Image 1 (cartoon, rainbow, N blue to C red):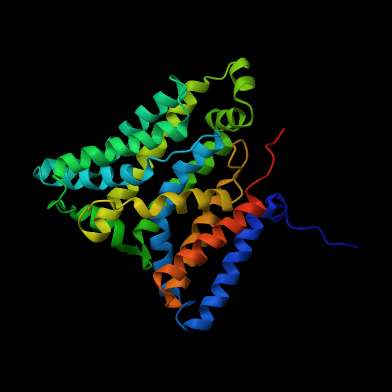
Image 2: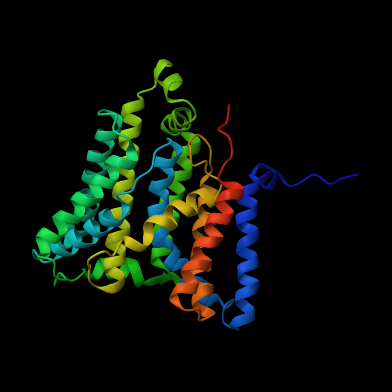
Length: 320
């Protein structure tokens, strides 16, 4: 007689289980190259790094569930970092408003993208790529093409690098809070059900009375805000914002979402899978660094693993 799987495991998709399996495999492989790879301190450090990607992947997942994509991530991250540090130079009031100001700037960029995609019906790949160029132009115009001299606030640095409770990074607590909100919204609210419905069949969702345009615009606003929030934390982590600080996060964010089982065409996916994808991508980057592989080899292995897993798990059919 076969033994039934626990309900939690049974509900997980095969891509999610595969992602968690790959995490265990990477941990084992990493431990062969470094005895400290499985130490609590090293794992907490990796989770701290994963938190920045986790924020971006959360917004990216919302957009991908709708059957869209957000290619404005790189420079929206930079907008969040640069504008928050710029606000920090305005005095005591600016320091208090630095974090929300950076996030609001990202949300404004997302609002424009959402309006263009939802109401003007421009393909998201084209519109968000254009918004990325606009954001880049604005930041280069503001800085004159040079590295900005503004510094992050103590609060930004504390959130990004501090450890307040039991030695756990504060950035991880931030990601946990955002993750809890995402799980609740997607699983327990009308908005979450609307996101899945639109991703499965937008026209059917519209004919059933769902405010498809508003739902889509809010998703892009969330993606912009979360990308900018990650930029705020990255600026706090390095104490300064810098040009192109968001460039390394676009492909990993998309890959983390899809490797976690979210259908790239929309309509299907769980946030637990995205968590697994983020950790998997972070560990993969880390182990390539531990193995001291040169940059060219790291890019080849990193890209090959992502493409291979996407070919296997990135082509599920939509539900329904």
